[in-house]
Length: 359
Length: 249
Image (tube, rainbow over all chains, first blue to last red; front, side, top):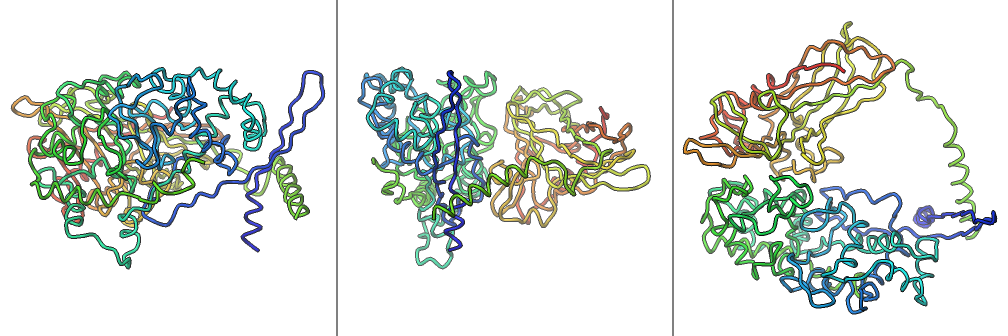
């Protein structure tokens, strides 16, 4: 009974009163149900999620609508691509391409990013150009090398659609669809995509779990977490911050002597940000090949070889953390141990959860 | 069921009307004021060019740069001319981030008085340092949490020019209880709190923290529990003189 009362208290009731030109008053009473985030008591919540914008509380109605939109090619210029075309659930919401193809076959120069635990992300895109999901959501729709649509056309199509006006009304209290509410709905769905159910989580969260790390995984974990730049992987320096496996910072990891893509510089216009890209989370890393902002590595072996021996140690752009790392510090066995550990970060429930699949 | 929902709506309505009323038992002291403590991070007396080239020098004349500089200050308190202490804040992360800097801590409702001294601690006390989770400035997402090694008290990343004139990484990640420096006390002048907002500017002179430290042999200082060494202890001594009072404005 107590729970029912608490649940009732969560019912958000809003009254929208809008004055019409003729002086009459429109009264539109609508109610939404707050979405209950189900974050298990695993290891993920050692950091607090970013606050959800006050004007876009997560609701069951908004999440359901956002999910429909995420999978609907109506958002693209010629009706052939949805968000899910390049963000496939089976691949932790990225795709297997180095560069995803837009509706007319054009390709970009950055690898599609996976989508999960976005509530913890302070910035979006490889260069961090957006700081909220609401800002981010519309950009791929308009990008000429991606979904290549005119936002006004998309809004018109949605407004003329047989069911979307009602669904927007249920979520936002207005049948008139706006680009703001379109972005809000997609953002709401994206916030619900949470991944913290990997073997790593289960083992770390429950010392009495019958599953344990294999000896190779455990060795890999210690190399991963060790911070001696002469003998350890020293991975944790950037892939940490609680257990999001990313500091969400921007780093140059020495892919080239002189960066081919200026990255974060485009956003900040600071020379010191040339060639810096966001540290990606390593959760589900086994699912998200190819790797790096430009998808240049196809396997985790190639990635590990880059960090062990391949990075451009003399590049003036290289992050100081990597400048002190000794090349060739890991043996092949150690390299493979780290990969064994990284494989424990795969969350198979993320890629099968029906709540995230095509409605 | 409908009745329940309507009564909840009614309760909300009443609650929102109630919240419009002013006053209450915790009314602020009318002569209390706001005090901002502003940490002015400097290298060689200059504002730091974050992400710039190595142009600053330590006591040994080694040139260095700063890409990241952030640190924890805890338990800021003010002492007035009668010896009365006003405890202000608990834990504040000071971050010289070039895009989203956080260098000021605001304290509201500070009792009126003539304050002659500001005291604070560098880092986090043992108990706080051992907390498994933290909120606000202690949230693990600030890049200052080091897993089982607990918190970093200070993070400075940049480059230095070595003896062979090469650009090398310079990393000081100081945490562990040995790096803690308690009761850094600075005399201040001109802080009269009386229904006003005053800012106390405190300089943090980064190069002073490195007095006597040779980057050539110590360019990668990572705190590890149980491995506090002479570098950590000289920094926790140096840090007390790295802070100085600048002005009240």
